[in-house]
Length: 502
Image (tube, rainbow, N blue to C red):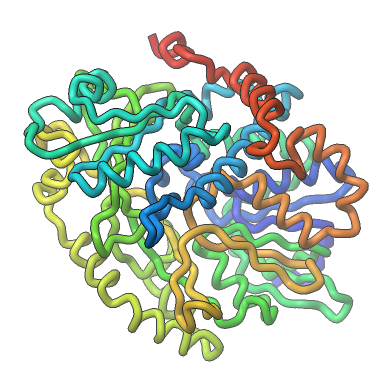
């Protein structure tokens, strides 16, 4: 182990979209700060941010039914959908700023316009979808949403799904043309390329093995260089742990009280990818259905048009599964080694509470390809097995924590930031909507960890994100102006994808 201590201002652990976003924001706001990045893999964006490791949905709550809840009185609560949509608008404003300033290029390589649709079957679900549409379509954020239960209109929207479908069951869909498909892996690499040009020190094949507080109040990291096998010591005033599922272990090693009584529940995912270009050409939308009873929210079935490596693709999934790994390229011992004395009861309680979920995930793992095809045929009735291949997606780790309202061992779905009281260290935990909300989540990290700088940074933040500190829903004129500007900058105007892919 080297005795030399290498000092820097900021260390980012993990070269995913979250670290890329935080690094890029900080370089705009405090260009003089020294930043180091440590990534255990050979390249950026190869875990959760990788294009095949997530659904690529620009999560704006346009089609995801789990972001809108039916209340006991039958009304539909869209407050979560509003929050997620506003968060995504924030991310898109920042991406537009980067393109306009020529800090990143060729936006069509990371974002493409695609209609977002919700599809349901059965009288009860159709009734819910109609009420959801009525609640959302009057809101400026969801302007342009359409509803139809007319088979002819649905055939026009989604011919592949409607063809050969029995006509005896009620079916309905909503559609909004302002949806997007995002290649977060490409975006991540673009931001890190920019950061490297600004002298950010990128260290690939470097694993952070330990993290502890020094007597001077700095954070010292023990980092293993996989290429040379040597151990290096790095210290920083601020550390961000953005290592996906791997964040939990490093948060525990930091020893901060805020990281105690927190655990992780890993969920793996698979997609079916269509290998027949004729079928791919017949579908043009991201179509989300309803999760089965007992299935976790991240297992909502959806049939997605994707744009991967400048090629139109079609994916269906995700099929959830269980693996004790916390990362796709992780260890089979990740789950067991995350159980510590302070979270043992929390994890035990979560296990007892979530037996049906565990059973469901294990059943999913055991599915044969033909069984998976049966689920696909609920979307595409005449789907043929030979036209579809299995793709292993990324690993997600849901947060387990003790909460006041739900008690010990509560499984939380979503994205959460944990930071020390003094703001010297922060970790990002959780999953979807994740990458889509990277910019507002990283702004939250900065507000929590650099409160003394926020006032001086405010004008620059407003330049990068014109709606910062405002509600777009309550300022429809500003919303329209921003949406028009974003569409022009990012190439999201109608028929843009046909121009590029024709």
